Length: 295
Length: 323
Image (cartoon, rainbow over all chains, first blue to last red; front, top):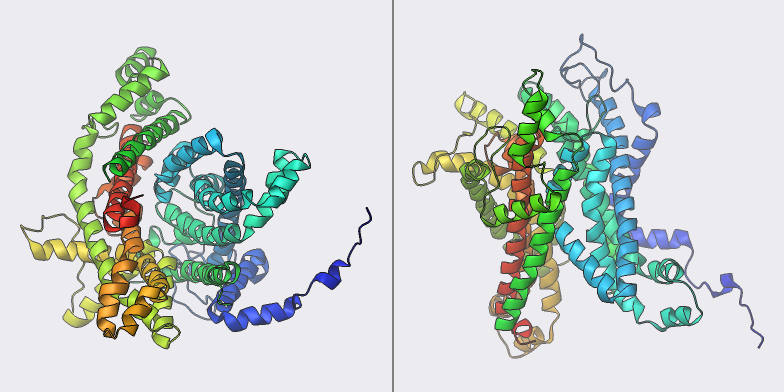
């Protein structure tokens, strides 16, 4: 039997990428604003060395708790460190923790969720009970328990935040994958003799991308907030690493009335980046979720 | 209905046993010897005899399965042993801190419900207007703002404002006095933490109220109610809101359990001696027995809140009850 191969470009009837991007901005002004915020945070984190006016960890005891001025745009902290430089480098810490926890947690959740739906039966039942147990721990409580075992520091904070995110993603992905499992192309793949791993990774996972991407976007925001909370409690990232939550610990409260900028700016940085991610995530959900799409 | 209740109640048992096993396992994963930490804490050198007697005292020299069963039996009887830091029974430590956290949690829920349901409904009814955008931005701001930062900023504002008005800065009290003994003292202590935690809670509930109201307003029975000439107020209160409340109730229940997580940081900001702060202290002091008990307490509250929400849902929604 002969088959004709169509030109894939000729079949792609979607408008070009730039016109879809313009339409996204028109339809989702708040989402676009969120995306702008996210891009700013990303650029700040990536090019921190080039953007920061001072060394973020260098103490300068001649200019302690200085108010915002031309020399120090956002002021200095109780050790004379430039707040703006610390916030710029803090973006990198937030990005590292936020992105790695969200992606590793999301990917493990994706594989477990799709696998659970694909195999069904006892495996599904067992995995569901395990997810139930892990999800019974509020995120910050689970993270605290894990930190109490592994100790503090960036890597351990990432582990502590990743673990509770896995079942949250797996749950959502599983319910989407249960629908996909019944679709004929999965049966066809099975009939072709493909292995379980190939069916899960190549045939089912790409089809649950919409809920997966929505979850991962939300996770980045949650992870940044969780990292900030842990660091604020003194159980996350440790000094002298610049991290937004850590900047609010100790000095920020002590000098709150005399040097309020120490307490205000790092919080604004956390708020704006999480706000950006959430606004973008909401717009992404509206665009990707056919049930919410108003077309 | 009875069958459904039984099924839901029985399902909590494996979750709780699993959670207990996980807590037990997590605490056994801690590197090093707990007794070494304890004996080394005083800074003095210790002899092997003291180490052995410490092992016997806390029971780590017995088989793991025996230890687990004993932990489970203790958990059932609410006996979690003594705190490794203070030496007092864990349950006494927790009971002393519980009222303050419970009060803030309840007040935060009241704040959340009082803000979320009216604002969420208005936002849905005025979809697309500036009012809707304002409510949505307020809500999304609540999710993005870290509660501890909001706490610091609100204390700062109160300090500056009282200084400006009365010429003397005023700080909210940090010691707990029961509401019935001194309501003013009690409320001025709990108000700011409740508002700070309640904002996020309200934000999440507001978004849920808006989306369920939008969905319900598209239902056929709303159109029917309109067609038969009912006034708008009646349609919203009796037909729309009543049906939209179901998922909102679920969310309020689930979020109530998550409040405990929020309290961990908020109590630290306001220097309140609640359960959340005890948790942080337990982790910092490596007080494993206390950490273990607190994690178990949180999980139990979470599992039972979920159960209560599910049962309430079944009671409110006949479709679940009769399936």
